Image (cartoon, rainbow, N blue to C red):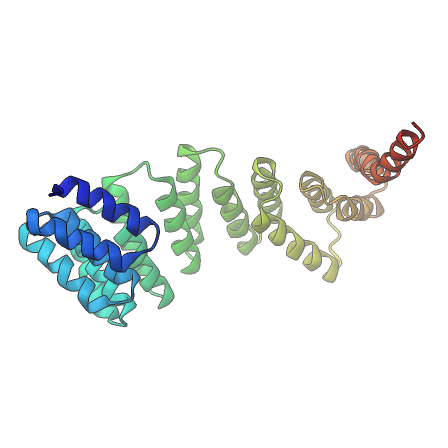
Amino acid sequence: MANAKTLIEKAKKLFDKQRYHEAIKIYEDALEIEPKNVDVLIEIGLAHRHLEQYAEAIIYYEKALKYDSKNKVALNNIGYARECGGDIEGAKEMYLKSLEIDPAYEIPLVNLAKIYNDNGQWNKSIEIYKNALEEEPFNVANWIDLGRAYRFMEDYGNAIKSDKQALKLDPNSKIAWNNIGFVYYKTGEILKAIEAYIKSLQIDWLYDLPYSNLINLHKELIKKEDTDAIIWLKVADAFFVAREYRRALHACNKALKINSEMTEASKLYDEILEVKTKIDMRPYLEKIVESALNLF
């Protein structure tokens, strides 16, 4: 006769293969041997949840709580099963209970904040993130999410403070740099916004958010016919970092049109043009090399 450990390992393999009905059956066999195994009860609940059998999932999570009344995982999972079943208020109740046990527990934190955010209850999201950060002040993601909540409330000062705290912990957070840039944009501090976008793009030039924000800013500057040469120069620099050479050259031209004696703009223009020419020539040179190789 198989022992509980062997049965649990077999059930986990079936679960990982999304064979939930079979996994449940094997887990039930394990429960015959270890009826108070909380982890197994939670796993059975998870399998039922994946099958969208939310009421059954909750039954097993509640059984787990009979043996471990402060099990934060079971409490969160009941909340999620309730949310999937459409009981949002019941879900919030369980997420809060889970967070009472561990305010820094990431899963109910995210689940609860999402509910508040979906309903525009940013002040409640802020409270949740603050509580979590009191327990775990080095969580970069929570600082970023706190900043985001402040931004949606148009509390831009605290939004920037939160993102800067994230950057103290992780200076290479492309998300925090982009978010700071967007807040500066919202407050009309355009140069600071562009500088922050550049920081984000220097970390990851393929990151779409600062690039999209930069495109929108570029369009806005064109529309209002902005005459600040320094801003245009910064935009050119940002597009250069993003490897968007056509727009970078356009922004340089704008700066030089406003101030033809702007040495920095002239130097940057030449640098961008040199790189762009090499990029543009590459397909042509590759074709020549390929033709030469075909001769042998």
